[in-house]
Length: 273
Ligand SMILES: C[S@@+](CC[C@H](N)C(=O)[O-])C[C@H]1O[C@@H](n2cnc3c(N)ncnc32)[C@H](O)[C@@H]1O
Figure 1 (tube, rainbow, N blue to C red):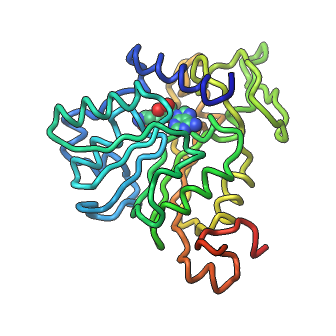
Figure 2 (tube, protein in one colour):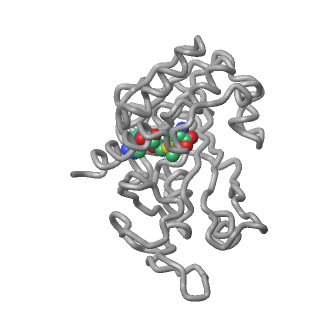
Figure 3 (cartoon, rainbow, N blue to C red):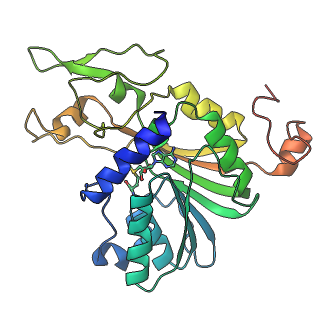
């Protein structure tokens, strides 16, 4: 089985069993939907009428919040059970949403130059390469469109286990290629999935080479000074689990000037290196 089939089945199971990662937005979260989605002010003050793509964002959280705020929402996800939660929850709330079952690596059914915002929760760990993902996002985003994404930090995926003093051991080489091995440390790993580690030069460098400008960057804090040693909040004191990026798609004109657009107006990553 390839990574798509494995991750699709795993996420179907997670959604069907009510995983914490498959929770729809609550009424209280919907009272201030944009604040709930983003406390950093990365999303424009109003998204009413904007075309928003929740990429690998099934589960009825992002979609419900953006639709409540008046956006025209499309959700792409590989898992039909995750997408069912978007459909059910949006219907229940009288909101509309379009769902598309595909991999983030192939968005060919979506129009070019269409979305104002692409919002991607943690999910790039489920594909072996970021290059097709970033290329597809650059294609479907309009000029100056915003791409907000969250990813697993490479260091978090390198932790294999703890030693006898409960210290975290970096057991995976930074230049590891291919699927991640099974480790004793299961924090921030979802059961039954196949995951890949992306290095910082890939997460950030490939993004720039795909035609984006990075406007902001943050590391969500999961440290809890009072947490028990077994708790993820303790782990978070030493290892940041996630990184979050705000990027803007450079204009097609900008790309043309630098000679790195192909004949269909698509960025050729790396052409201006
Ligand atoms: C952490 S969940 C994100 C959704 C959730 N709403 C959230 O905010 O946490 C990761 C999602 O990525 C999806 N996924 C995994 N591999 C994918 C792929 N190749 N293409 C599209 N979606 C994928 C999963 O089905 C899952 O819905």
